[in-house]
Length: 395
Image (cartoon, rainbow, N blue to C red; front, side, top):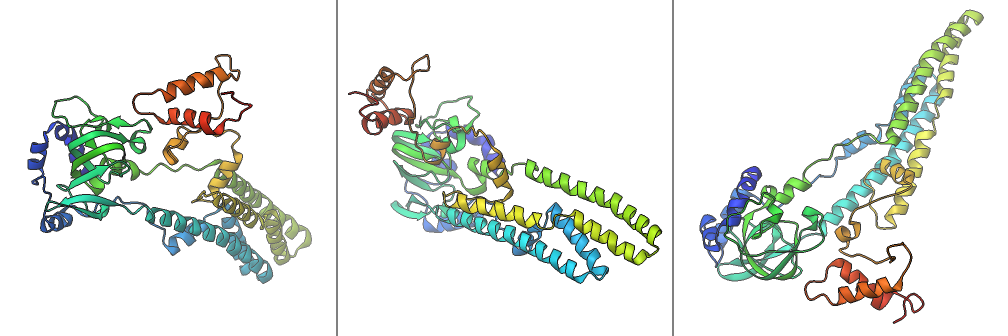
């Protein structure tokens, strides 16, 4: 369904408001409650499939998928079969403690992430039988008439029926923080990007100015936003996993060479093959750093706790090592995408020197804007009027 709607978005963009209402078999009074119930059964809830929390069994299994734990498990089995019960118990404790630390920390992070999503429950103002009514965004269906005003979130793909000074922030879709104007259009265009279509409002965008009455044309998995958030990025092993894998195989190769060699040499020289076997196993155990998995996971868990105190959710412990290995982190529009806020930190002339005249001219330009002031203008004005000190800039 999503693919079909995407192919016809440009055609919907060119429809007049009257033709749009006819196409979706509705009118300005909106759908009746019976019609909405029937369409909800046909199209399903207006929700996007998100990654669900892992089951306990799957989470437990993934917490033991560690190269060192695999080596310890093999040695534990060999020790148990060779009646070295004490050694096997010690290695079992190391495996349980290490995997438990990883399991508990990642489970807590998953629960925090799900709780964060639950806080984003939304409602929409829908015209039902001629009366504006607040309904859950999940119940929106194609054909609904939605009323929007400044500050509202667009909860489905919409076609504008009427608008006044409407400006939309589409940063979640395009990455650009500057609002774009939207209006009614019935002219043929060659625009292929849905975000650039003048009369369409896409799920995930927000109203920063103006008002509008719009028609729901797509919900849930059929929306453009769904195609973005449900795309799974390819997961590649990071340096941390690659390093562990390299060390683990190095230990395994050393064992495959040294253990048989020690076993044979000790057996030939002493003639006690049973004692030589136990000695070779002891060599294999000695080559393995049993405490390393627990120490590594403990340190990663500590880093996760520190980040959680700074309101950062770490879903996978292995990401901690990547963050710690960074010397320079470059991001694009982080502030505008997360807090819709930019802060002026430094100003300079063309030679890179701090110059208050640059700040004065930038302030006059930002303050004198006759139209909409963008986030950069607001940052300059805020710095000039509140953040800067008397020594930094003389009025």
